[in-house]
Amino acid sequence: MRNLLRWTVAAMLVTVPLVAVAAPAGAKLDGKCTGSGTIRENGRLYDAKVIDEATIPRVGTVDWEGSTGVAKKRKTRGEVQVGFPPPIGEVTVGEWGKDGKTSSSPGNTGTYRYDLPSLIAGIKIPVHGTHTEPGINCSGNVVVQIEGTSPLAWASLALTLVTVMGVGLAMQARPRPGVRF
Amino acid sequence: MRGRPVLGAFAGFFFGLFLGLDLLFFGVVQLDSVLLTVLPFVGLALGIALAFWAPFRRNVDADGSDTVAG
Image 1: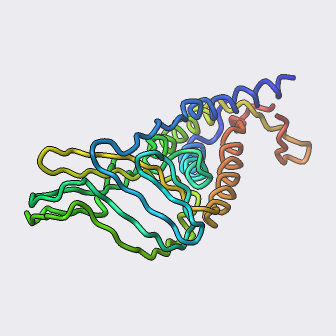
Image 2: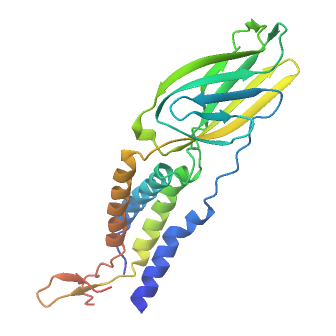
Image 3: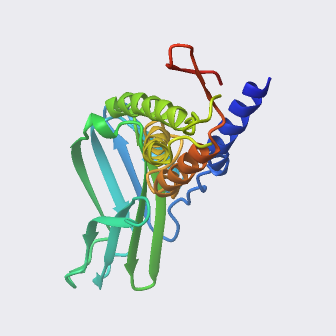
């Protein structure tokens, strides 16, 4: 019975910090901007106005569009960032308009073929984007998750079990010299 | 009486690190979660604390070898 109590207390000490695991709710695209993409492989439309989470195939071709509806010539500026754990923070993976060029197009469309590494499958990646032009400020968040499970997940799980055994070994009392248990 | 604090620190740190990676790879936390940064250090502190607490004792057999009694 004492052993059970000891194991229970030890397990609680290790797992209590995990209680606070709760991802903040994402915010959809706000402002006058619109943006969407259709992945050809699954035929699914991802509209940034209505979704804040997207699970996508690891390999695919996406037909995308983005628009503010303004046709006059103006300076535009924006960027896309990916969130990493502190102290790294947000890393800019794409930007436009930083060179001061002007645009007279109300929007843009294109097709993009992507092939993501299987190592990052299953990871929830927070992506944050902003777009600014005179009279318009848009920002949006989406959490992108690639379908499948990374092979690194199983390696990490195995190494976790190894370290649990290490902690278990560290918890075994060593006899003091001259003291017999 | 105490266990092995150095082993506890080492194993605790990597336990926290790999536990964080498990949570990440299985989609429990997002890539920007502060847990990924904090867990290794929580594991380090817990590993040291559990090693000093050392709730499991060893029995010394008649032949002088140790067996874990719990």
